[in-house]
Image 1 (tube, rainbow, N blue to C red):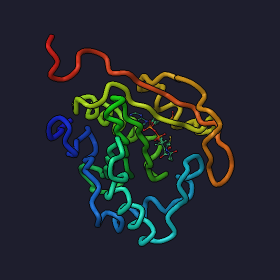
Image 2 (tube, protein in one colour):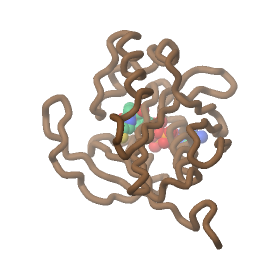
Image 3 (cartoon, rainbow, N blue to C red):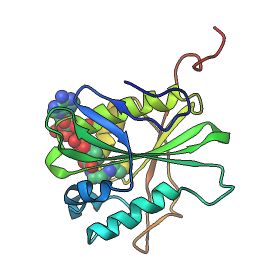
Image 4 (cartoon, helix red, strand yellow):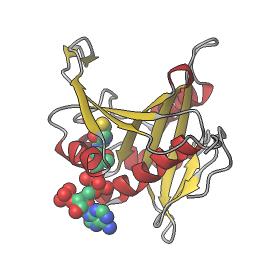
Length: 192
Ligand SMILES: CC(C)(COP(=O)(O)OP(=O)(O)OC[C@H]1O[C@@H](n2cnc3c(N)ncnc32)[C@H](O)[C@@H]1OP(=O)(O)O)[C@@H](O)C(=O)NCCC(=O)NCCS
């Protein structure tokens, strides 16, 4: 993994991918991947209808939370190192005061079943721990999202609780599960 130092918004590399901070122009590159409705079966977002839709969504991500919010929004694009094809996006919302981050990941269906998401999330978790701001990484997952459930279990996340049913997706209550993985070992920079 190649971070750019603790707390930075840099990118990182995995064995097969370059994971780079999201930029305003990325909608054109990601729209052909992220328009696929199969990606949104178990996530709260709607598929972007047009490239402009996706550009507006990315612009919101890049603006970040309202002033004064105690969280940071980090967004990355992932592309294959050798072929250059865009495979999807990774996100982290860092709650610094609580020393935790909530992550999300969206990959185009043609890239499922090849280990890319696991590879990306494993490096993302390491990157977040290395930032020094995060001791726990969380993922909220729909109980029907078997692929995502397999992914977090494979990477050592544990079920914390069935999330309460106060969330909504497209107007309906959800009963999403909350998974958490705690940092093991000393904090980066901590005295040993
Ligand atoms: C969730 C999602 C990212 C999971 O993708 P995925 O490709 O199934 O996940 P992984 O990268 O962990 O791949 C694991 C599969 O690749 C296989 N695989 C093949 N080569 C592999 C390799 N080199 N390394 C690891 N796994 C490999 C594994 O055996 C496993 O197969 P299985 O699904 O039949 O058990 C993907 O389905 C997705 O983007 N869904 C839509 C968005 C979404 O739901 N996001 C999550 C919201 S919580």
